Length: 311
Ligand SMILES: Cc1cc2nc3c(=O)[nH]c(=O)nc-3n(C[C@H](O)[C@H](O)[C@H](O)COP(=O)(O)OP(=O)(O)OC[C@H]3O[C@@H](n4cnc5c(N)ncnc54)[C@H](O)[C@@H]3O)c2cc1C
Image (tube, rainbow, N blue to C red; front, side):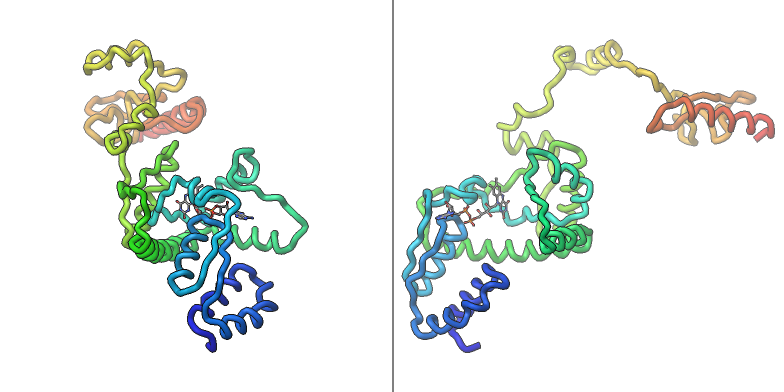
């Protein structure tokens, strides 16, 4: 390469910023950098990216002017609560996107806004994005994002040490809350994956969450007013007996199995009793996912065969 290192970096930045359009401008930019090593650079936008860029340019000796239409940090950099998360790298292109797709595309409060156009590039991008929503790509992206975040952390700490900003920094960690069990399970898988890459995070229970951040206590699922007085085991049992309802699908009181608490064997014979079988929904080891009528008919037909053949 001909130019000095800073010229190369700017060259790359221009190519990244204007993919496909930069080539026509490169020659003149390169020449002007070669002729004059130090420039007066105007950086547009005083968010984290603009200010970090300005700081680097200034350190390399350039004169820098930062222009912003609002106050510094008024954009996304302030909107994210000034948090610096180096381990929270869940890639967007992930297999979980497939099940979220209808909601992502159709919900009015979706963070994704896609306006379909007759533009082959848009459709190609969409197809390539969906093709990337697989486990291997998600793993590769996680590794790449973690590496990028680690180098970003080093660079940010260097900048912070240099400029010593007049503000407080707190390193208490980031607590991510999930509304559903499925969300927690997906996070648990990501945490396990990242652990293999050296990024250690912890999955905590609701109680541990509140111990870490007592302000969350008010958001915890509230106790039913009717059970408010029940504190001892006996009171809780009394409350459950008084309020619980089996509705229409009671099963499993004589469940099939070979354990100590199981009542019938695989031929529906009661353990330890001669000549007695149980044939109804009570032998189901667990409640079925649908209605109980058809499974009970199947149990009865099977029992008829067993009784007829002496099985
Ligand atoms: C709630 C939330 C959570 C986030 N969580 C994460 C996370 O966990 N991890 C992560 O990596 N990222 C996260 N982000 C994204 C991250 O904050 C942004 O990617 C980052 O702050 C972008 O920085 P920026 O400097 O490019 O943009 P900004 O901070 O938005 O700065 C752009 C600046 O440009 C100015 N500007 C715009 N147009 C003009 C113009 N025409 N003339 C002059 N000035 C102009 C704006 O006023 C603004 O000050 C989150 C963002 C939000 C809002």
